[in-house]
Image (cartoon, rainbow, N blue to C red; front, side, top):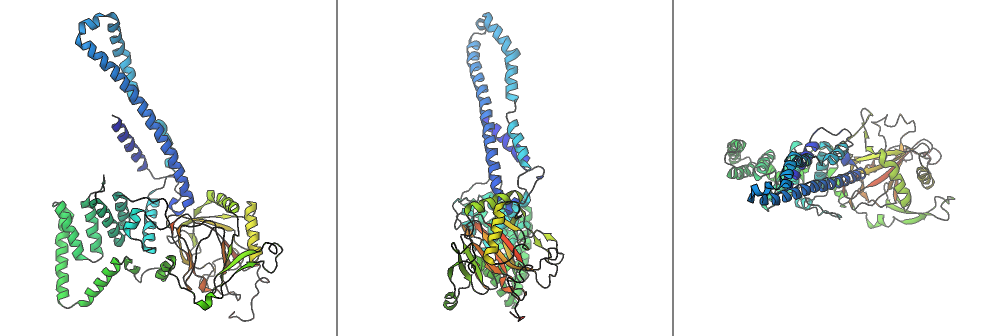
Length: 550
């Protein structure tokens, strides 16, 4: 009976989770900081669930005691019914039990102990992630797989570089990842994850919902879509061994055999070039490169970008490296830094990228995070054609804007930026705080407006973005570097440090070497804040040279 109660509860919960879409969806997968709130919500629900189980067990215990008492009484009574009922007390108690006490027992059995839990779940459910979040998180796993060249087995085992809370994927989890890829017509990842699901099934892992026939059906079709007819045919034959009546597989079997026969005729006719192309495609897939995404990829420097993210960047020559220094910096004997100069380090020479260590305290960073967290919204990009702010699949994070009058800590940080850089921040944009989500990233981009974007910052009236100040407010266990794809530089997050570079030459022309990206966060929680400093107010602080080429 207890088992039936538990099953009934799970059916009820699943019904609630699968019903209407959430009313307060916030792209949870784009911010680890806000996902922490989901963990706290789940903890509250688990406490409520335990309370429900305790109440249900208490009810069953009462029913059990009542049944045991009546069972003992019934055994005695049945042995000598006339003698038992000849006692007037027994006769009275029988009338009372059947007239009153069985009715009370019925009420106890029918009482709903789940009301409190279901009420709590209904309230919290409106803040749950929805299908978009689950799909977004699945795509993030596949993006991490590609960027960091991770084997499917490694991800499924949960043993990621830098990870401390390993968690393995079940057969159902791998199958769901494959289905997400399939729905996006990404047959490469469909094959990878369906193969992993099948492998785990064959190793003895159990699944209540998925069987080998279903997985093989997806596998054969995804492999066919990649142009590998022989392998698609093999998987179809495996499927039919398990289910010889499978209608689609029987149809595919005939179709694949027919197509394979045609292909062999073409090969026999001397079409070796096509064979080599197919072989090359297969080798790429086996190497886990996803066909390099082809020439149609919107990101021309993707390979270089991903290499930099993996730490495979360009190494400086010894001569260039010898010109890179660490120093104590007081910005021409600035009164605030004569006695306590800041620690300045050269990260790159061309363009000149500087890092300032221990520039903010832990207390200041926590205050900034707390101020930003309630206002985090999906980060947007400016459409280069329309100028309208919109979300983009290549920017996975949430951000918030903090003004200097909101809290003293924001004003202090702004003033510190001005004192160290020597630039006027009164015309700069407000401090932007960003928190990255699952596989959080921002693919290669420029901070400044190009000539083909004349209206990029027109509404601000402060000119172009002359410089960028990027403050790291957390360490990242693995991934999350800031990479400059044009020059091959990689800057790794270090809590409390800030990096600074000029986006424009002194002439006002854009420095295209500053094209940069935020690599996907593999393991960890990445918090940063940006200060984009504009041209207005810098006329006498960073003078325009006489030469236009400077």
